[in-house]
Picture 1 (cartoon, one colour):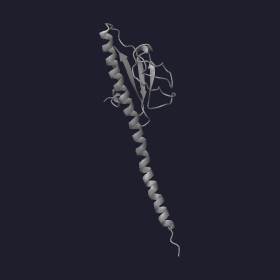
Picture 2 (cartoon, helix red, strand yellow):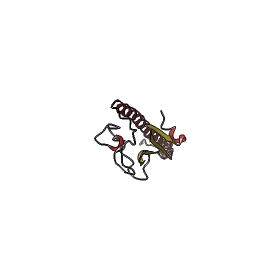
Picture 3 (cartoon, one colour):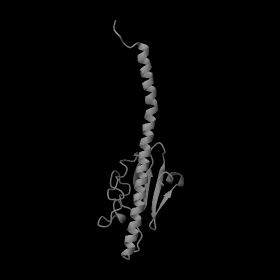
Picture 4 (cartoon, one colour):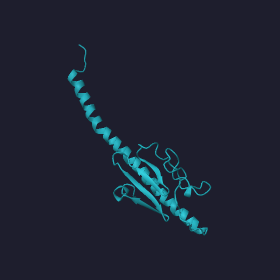
Length: 153
């Protein structure tokens, strides 16, 4: 007599695998969103540090002009952002390896330069919305506060 699995045993195994999959898939997508936001936090922290260093370097040279922007093209998709202070490619770099801006208008979890001194972070769909970073008098201001809390340390 041949030994084999019964139909009930096979159905039971398929149901168990389905339940495990239903639990695991949402956890993986949440982990990806968390990683994307952590990368944005890290980028913003690096920008704050670089801005501070640039302001100090300018002061040491006797140059008290404010930093106006952090590079990138206004509305430019899939191009380097946070590359050079005041867009001067012969000057200091903001980030050694600048990230790319959003690939297109529907992209999420990415940065875009949206004004002369304004940058917008588009949160992943799980959080939704945006946070707007503005460069004012060598400071980085963020709004709205309820979204900026995700980008704070």
